[in-house]
Length: 125
Image 1 (cartoon, rainbow, N blue to C red):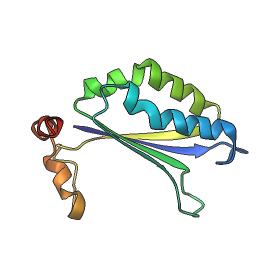
Image 2 (image 1 turned 90 degrees about the vertical axis):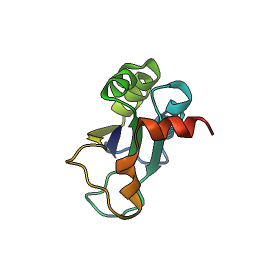
Image 3 (image 1 turned 45 degrees about the vertical axis):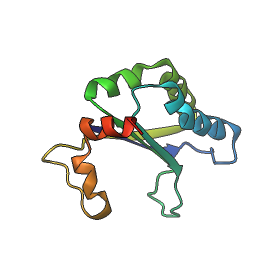
């Protein structure tokens, strides 16, 4: 499983009250309705006042690197990319959650065991 993290920082002078920002956020929230490769999705606004803080984050979960690659070129995702390009810059981190180089502790500890078998079980509910 691949955890796809994207951290967005608004370009000056954009803020949450701007129509372009609201539109980009709304587009991002809708991706799971249009892109089948997404098996898990979360996104949200930053609440930290710290200077180095980003403004928005996306967390997507994909079964394989190939599924993530298909998501990246999907037309619905590309529409969202075009909206964000007008208002923000971003940084991306992709984590193989089953890798020996990935560590989960506490409430997130179960993530390391999350895999295709678990996903198949969840699909039956």
